[in-house]
Amino acid sequence: MAFVRWSKDALRDLEKLDTAIASRIVEKVVWLESHFSNTMPEKLHGELKDWYKLRVGDYRVLYSMRGEEITVEAVGHRRDIYT
Image 1 (tube, rainbow, N blue to C red):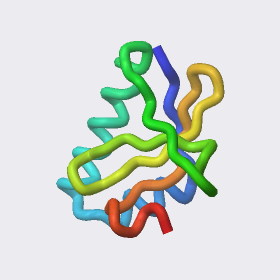
Image 2 (cartoon, one colour):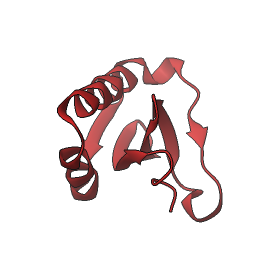
Image 3 (cartoon, helix red, strand yellow):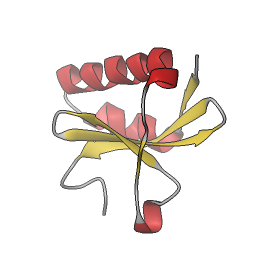
Image 4 (cartoon, one colour):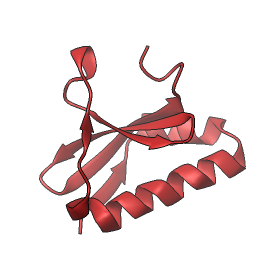
């Protein structure tokens, strides 16, 4: 089982979202934590090449990994998150 940690930036991003959306995102991150060994992380490219993405509807959770430690780096709408 993986261990998830939230960066300060990601927590700030989460606080800006509607409660229902934020709740769905947290649920998906908890799901990732328990099912990490059965998932294939989606690696990003370019400036974000060291990060991975998790899709939650129109929102994205960007995270980094070190071993089985996952750090949520950013959360946002797909049209804004990559800029």
